[in-house]
Length: 107
Image 1 (cartoon, rainbow, N blue to C red):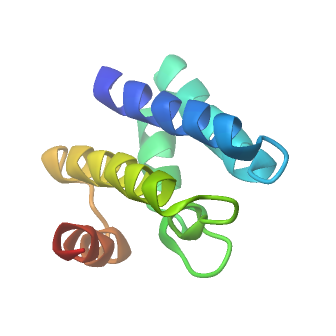
Image 2: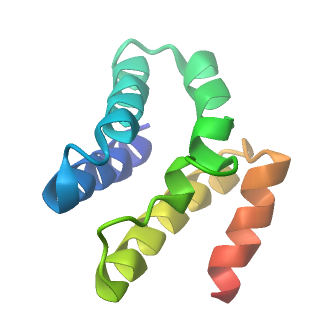
């Protein structure tokens, strides 16, 4: 779970650097995920990782691009791919996450 925790923290730090106000709700959601890991509530963690907040449509974390340069967007995509790789390694990747995994690999 350390790999998940580390990459989620990387995303939190990255979004805070870009604009903590614009990404306030995403950062809060990611902090909740880190808390779930810390409390060893892994089933709830995986449930939240396979949610619309992460991989859904408009407003989902993966679609957050406002205020990012092209270079920052590329870095953000790399961080998301790291999360998706961990989900794949843990065999916890839902249907939407699988689709986005393929998208990011081919981008």
